[in-house]
Amino acid sequence: VQLQASGGGSVQAGGSLRLSCVVSGRIGSINFMGWYRQAPGKQREPVALITSSGVITYADSVKGRFTISRDNAKNTLYLQMNSLEPEDTAVYYCNSLVDWTAYWGQGTQVTVSS
Image (cartoon, rainbow, N blue to C red; front, side, top):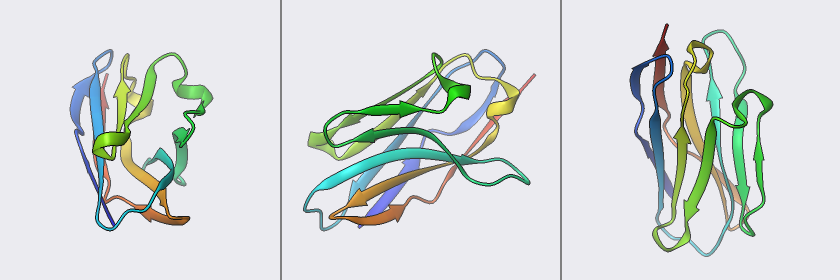
């Protein structure tokens, strides 16, 4: 199983980006998917999570600005990020629980300038 994240980049504060994460390989069922981020000098933290039944959880810092979604037919996870702030600068990782085993994507850099 492999996770391929894309969509990162550099934007000014107030801008938007859309991250994608494709899950490929031998997949029975995807139980859980989520986005995490790690800023320089900080621990990796959850940003947005979505279960197989569609239950969504957001970090307080991104509520109202970020939207997580998934396309089950394409085994793809998305993160629409609006109203980006410099504090959102980090490497963003996708995570998926596939057949009850956790996998991580390679990370994609998001840089927000003021």
